[in-house]
Length: 239
Image (cartoon, rainbow, N blue to C red; front, top):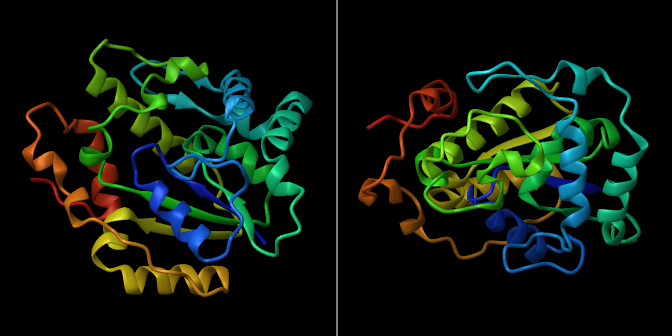
């Protein structure tokens, strides 16, 4: 069985990567402290290939039609297969990978691997944008957007883009949606859901309650109007 995690950087994806590793899932090698499969360069290059097929419609709106309909370039397939070499070549019965940039190429990952297990990992955007991540500036991965120079705003747009790219893609055959907050405060039920989804026992790892609601003591801007619809859909209450 092959497993991957779809989630923006700073959405708490390291917790699911560490959980899967503790549960006997081979997550590739080598890994960094966040549980990301290294080295990441070929995944980053694959993101830039994919971005050529995304049409920008201004005002932070994107059209993914070409990406969804185009034949996947051989260059992209080679980059992904080389990035995932340690995973794909492993004879482990349960294996997978996690790196946040997978979300930036999610439509083509689904087409390359339609039968794998997808774990969608989300976190309250108000917490998700507090810390810096490599995907804060989508332009580094070839994605066009209205860059403002306001770091928080650009991070928020990155969060929005990654929600939009998932929303635009037909849901794969095997998909599980998990909120980071539920892993923190309702871990037993959450890992039971993951166990049912994967068909294997899932280990518990230590989770920190203080990682939830950090925005409440933040003095910067952490709420944007375009968060509202997604927050309601995901069950996050506005202040």
